[in-house]
Figure (cartoon, rainbow, N blue to C red):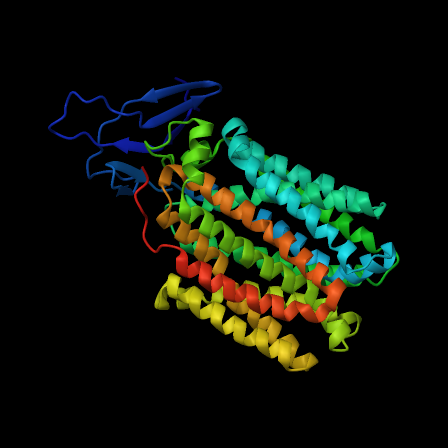
Length: 468
């Protein structure tokens, strides 16, 4: 074998001293071009110097990234996924400051402009439903690139400010791409064995950074004649994201990418590899549907507040053109909460923390609704962001504890993708209500949806249940 052959140690299966005849499972993969050779390896003695082994419950020993090259690769993979979530946050933070300008340019009311969110929703749901099939067919790395290219196409349609039907079609294509990438990134990080909870918090904090940055730029574009050129900035970011995904993941499967950082494949014996069987197992899980609907409501509340609060403040609180920065304050709070409240999650317990954050957020929403103060309301919006921030990564961490390991990536992909539809559904519902009774409907809708979140979370089991 050639000396430059890359050796990827993924899993070592220890033999029981009483079952010497039992065939050993492949433990190491040697890749040389297109040739793959499996080497049967016995349990390593305690004198190993290059790997730190963690025994798993099924007898498999997982070797975490223990060489400098593996650690660098792990950091690079995680940083790339963080940038993908930055782009997702950038996308979600864009619409709010541009919404009043879009209404003016296209001469449409609340109901019609909300078609943006309807088409976005169609894209999200389509991407979420197709994710498991596409990932099994083409692999994690390829699907991530497909998603990023879809965003490039969507932003390219929107940049020249085309007729309104074409403009909203760009949102549908964009939603499809976002759903694929959101599902892939969340599923990959949830499968990591080292510091998954912290990394999930950081991943979604970077989402918040993107959502914080975008309104700062979009507010400036909203005041100039070439307002739609904001989407050219988005095209540039999406192209850079595509380049990173190709360079880092190189169209490989998730298991191959995990093997590069010394981690064993994530699936267990419960997965027979049949797509129809996998879908059937997934959608028979009650906890999957509860968590998916919880995330749908949560993401809907998050994006509705960040998107419509600018219009709300300008029409009901006398805010001026700079009101777009209130949206940045909300997403800035979201970012801060996802990192700054990690210690609270650990102290209180993640399940109880969600109840605490949701109840406090409802109280602050009542302040925004009932106290007619521009400054007070703006500050309260930022604190609502802080409280809502940790909820999403907590739910993803909880999914890793209560869902079957062989279905985890597909389930988290569905939760994330289906949940993202909330970023389209609830903002559309807000626009439909606003066209009938005015934008004052925003706060009652948000308060009721937050209350519904509390009810849904109470129904989510705290422990995994047996899957037949």
